[in-house]
Length: 131
Image 1 (cartoon, rainbow, N blue to C red):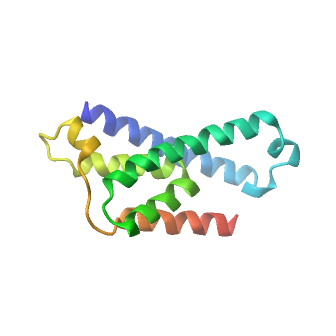
Image 2 (cartoon, rainbow, N blue to C red; image 1 turned 90 degrees about the vertical axis):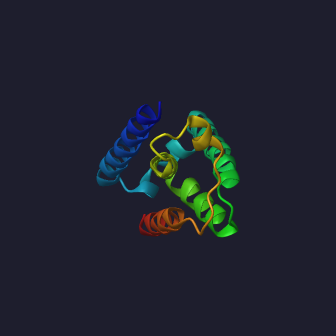
């Protein structure tokens, strides 16, 4: 199961990086027409995505034991979405020992500043600033 999850989240990460890179070369992030931003289904999709991000963050917040790491992951998840979420999952999956169990993935807590979260939150801020 752990190998399946590693492959799954690698595919999510790779595909999200590919599609967002492609979209960035097609159209700047904030150049989306007003008709799109105000369309009811766009709004509903954004609510769905960000409530999903919030739900995932609650789990990440439980797993991280420092407020610095929690804040960094919040920023990273809210700005990078599934890119940050898949990176978080891959980080957690590869931190498990070879004989680790799925329960360890879900419940093991992580001490420390959350370096990956800090890096990703900085990247997210940079992407938004450049957009």
